[in-house]
Amino acid sequence: MLKYKVISKSKGETQALAAKIVRLLKPSSVVLLTGDLGAGKTTFVGGALKELGYQDHVVSPTFNILKCYFEVQPNVFHIDAYRLEDQNIDIGLEEFLEGEGISFVEWPNFIEKILPRKTITIKITRISDNEREFELSSDSEMYREVFDSLEGK
Ligand SMILES: Nc1ncnc2c1ncn2[C@@H]1O[C@H](COP(=O)(O)OP(=O)(O)OP(=O)(O)O)[C@@H](O)[C@H]1O
Ligand SMILES: [Mg+2]
Image 1: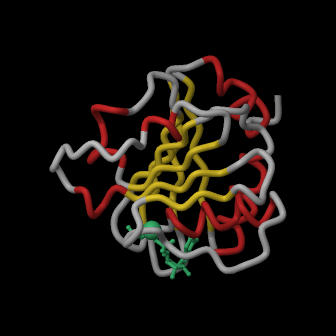
Image 2: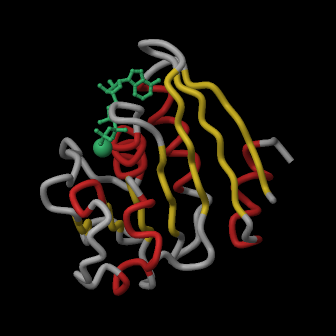
C-alpha cells in the first residue's frame, strides 16, 4: 500500500498540492476524495483544474452529479455522488471513469459498485478552520510517481 500524509494550512496550500499532484497523474487516473462536508474536496479539484489552465471558478457539481472539462488536457471529469446516495441508479458514469481523462470523485462511497480497480484515495480531515490533513493512499503501482515525488524521491 502506498501512503503519504501532509498538512495544508490554507486553501492556497491545498490548491498548490492539487496542482502538484495533477501533473503526476497518468491518463485514466481516478482520484477518490473523501472527507466531511466542507473538508476541501471541491477546493482540491479547483486547484487541479487551475493548474491545467481552467480559468473560471470551479463549483461543486452536487446538483449535476457530473461536470466534464473538455477544455483542459487531459480532460477532467468531476463527479459528486452526494445526491445519488445509495440509490444504485445507473446513469452511465462508468463511461467517464474508464475513459482517458482524469476523474475526481467526491463521495465515492455512493458509487462504490462502479468504481474501477486502480484508484488513489485522498482522505481530507479538518483539523481547524484553516488546517486540513491530507492522507493519500493507493493499492495501485499506477500512482507510484505521485508518492515518490511527494516524498522527494
Ligand atoms: N486548508 C484548507 N484547504 C481547503 N479548504 C480550506 C482550507 N482552509 C479552509 N478551507 C475552506 O473550507 C471550505 C472547503 O469547501 P469545499 O467546497 O472545498 O468542501 P467539500 O469537501 O467539497 O464539501 P462538500 O462535501 O460539501 O462538497 C472552503 O470554504 C475553503 O475556503
Ligand atoms: Mg464539494
